[in-house]
Length: 307
Image 1 (cartoon, rainbow, N blue to C red):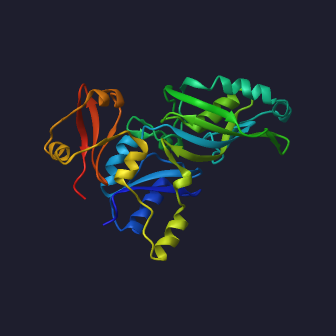
Image 2: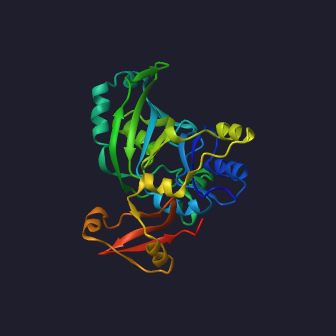
Image 3: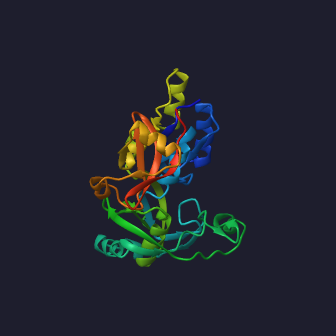
């Protein structure tokens, strides 16, 4: 059986998230593999995979904020809001060439903070029981409702570059809440500048406190496995400690939690542990439970089996 915990994968382009999960199932010799947050096939970067009982941690990670680096091409709209879709409209090259960095910065400013975003029509959101992307690819017109997202950072990372005399490529970094569509940001930036826009490159570099610097690509994992090395799985206790505040448990605490009892909090702990915040209950090197605060007590959300 694979070690319970998280495996951080740096996804290569053209792989689906499901493809990565399937490959890791083979490498780890277990069916119990899941991921926290899909990446489009075009995108690269960080995928968090849960293995064995570590899959239970994924529930607490899917809503964490994220960081992306992106290249946005100004001058054309596409069906999918990225480079993989057919071009719908293309702007006058002179209008694209006339766009200044100051104009881009002003448009970016209106796409920061708490904004209402209409997801891309080829998102995985369900409409009448069917994924939006499936309806679009079937020829249906899909209009999705706007939803509130938070864009903590949306900044240029290089000077805009004119491409083929008719497009302007913009490199940017985005810190955002879960549920944000970077393709939609590209579309909306192009709309604000009056020339259209779509995404040509996307890389996820962070989920919560986990970084792509901790991750390995599938070829690296496959090579290591072929050399007889163990997969670099982050054990559940270490994985939870990296992201969440920790409650160190006594032997009696563990017994109580496994019997469905609540734990009393000291005055100091009431200040340390906020409400509506997952807390990792750890004893030794084992993740015993994920906890939540209820008044002056801690209640288990999930209890993990003895390792």
